[in-house]
Image (cartoon, rainbow, N blue to C red; front, side):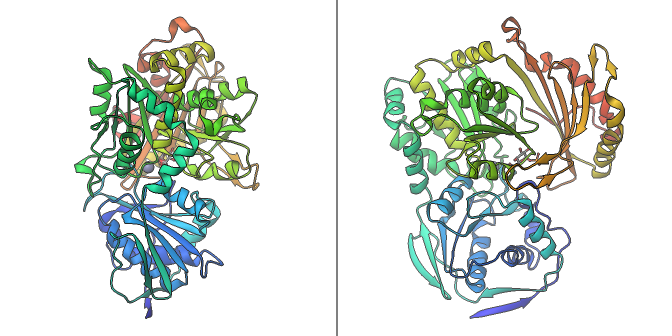
Length: 542
Ligand code: G1P
Ligand code: ZN
């Protein structure tokens, strides 16, 4: 039976960089989930009888929300929902299932790398029929709808059994519980040379993968240990937990310190990697060498042809604006297009759909390709493994060889997390106000060559996105970028991105923070960040 329930709008349901993210207690407010889900459905056309894909990263509140979305999808007229077993699907797996089964769209329940649990974060994101995050046109419409919503529709029915694969009926809709791993694993086998990677493991190559008690555990066990034959125990923290074991499932040098220490220690494995809460991010570390995500993008692009799925070469590369320019140098050498987009995976969708680019990446540990429309953590790990298997040499050798050929882009991001919003906004305004007068200003030996607020014109749909980050540019290609995070759930987070290009190979082995020292000092003086935030140092440096 379909019921129409009266509701009143919430004022705070604006989707951010990657869907709506809030603390769990906010999502637990009466009708909070239903308002947002109904607003998604109200912003879409023509889905009657169509298929919706549904899954989440298994964090606290996942199961409850899955049940409610199923009942609302039935009430709103979807014909079928494909839902991951146990309500679990990684973000790239959702993207794949949408594409493979030509679904109308999908809903991902995740707050990515943010902590989970009753006081942790939760999130809801809508993906369109190409498998990628909804573009701003749709997220703006969803937000507008949340401001005026007066009712939502839901069927009254018992909960669906999410643990048993198979088809059941909910109102006039079919619910199909699918194996969360099988389709994704099949896609990876099409892209990569599993025999060759298997040979690598058989030759004694050792790897550790930290699933961070998050969604990639079952995927990594199936692909790395069962399909590729890596020894049991290759996958650490492989059991998804609703609170991620109390950790931040964020594969960076702070939260994935255990695997970092392993990679840097004595008797380190040949290759270490990690992925985040919902499986779209990656951390890549060779024995004794951390590879920045920006460098990883460039190195994967330079070597992608070694994997069967990319043997024909790349159409082009895209990176988000704050991501280092390392990939630009690869694109230039390959003679292919290079696109610089605002932060957030949704800006890559059009470029991928139009066939302009094959590989995309962000400095925030996101890399992916045209195989889906999300970034993909395990995909990056498998492409690295394929490259290592084909080149038969160490990570260190590949990384240093890359720098010797292309030069090195020293790169770091300094985050000031959960600072007071007013101060953060005042700092950004002060920087924006200064933009016209910055050119030519000197700070010690550094002279500013230009400064702007990044704007993007989408070459495919012609849309414009403004105010995407303040850029301070220097004559040698060095940059400092400031922007506010669009994914936080408390206060504001200021991100400062610092980059310096070094062509001279004899200067490629300097510690990163030291290599960037004068730019870091400038970035703090220019923004007067300590004054605006009362913080003397960043909370996270990656
Ligand atoms: C962050 C990252 C961005 C990424 C997004 C979603 O967004 O910086 O690159 O696309 O998470 O994973 P931000 O918090 O900076 O808005
Ligand atoms: Zn994520």
